[in-house]
Length: 183
Image (cartoon, rainbow, N blue to C red; front, side, top):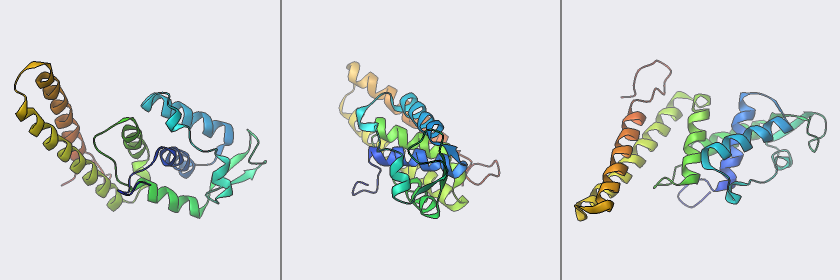
C-alpha cells in the first residue's frame, strides 16, 4: 500500500482475486479469466495492472489448491483465513483522489464486493467515498472560480456536475441491506 493507505495496482488485482474467492471456490483458469475480464473492462488494458501470478496467493497462504496442483488450470482454489483477513484489509483501504484508472478500478472492486463486508465496514467505506468526492468537488469548484470562461470553464462545469452526481449516488448507497439510504 501507499503511505496514505491506498492500494497499489497489484493490490487491486489481489483484491479482485480474494474477493472472488470469498464468494466461493474457483478453478484457477476461471479466476484468472474473471480478473482479466473485469480489470480490462473497468480500467482498460494496462501494464501497470498486470498483477503478480495467482500462484503467489497460495505461496503466501492466502489461498489453497483444494484439488489439483496450483500450477494447473483446472486446480480449484479456496480462500484461507489469512486470505479473508487480507481481503478485509484491502477492502477497507482508502481510495486516492482524484479518481484515475487505478482508483476507478479500486472503487469498482469495492462496489463489486461491498456486500461481503460487515455492515459497519460498508458504512465506513461509503463515508470514505463520500468524503473523497466532497474533497474533489471543493478542489474543482475552487479552480472553477479562477476561470470564468472558455473551454476550461466548460470542462470544469462538466466535471463538477459528474462529481455532484457521484456524491449523491454515494450518499444514497444502501450499505446496511435495509433498502434505506445511509443517514
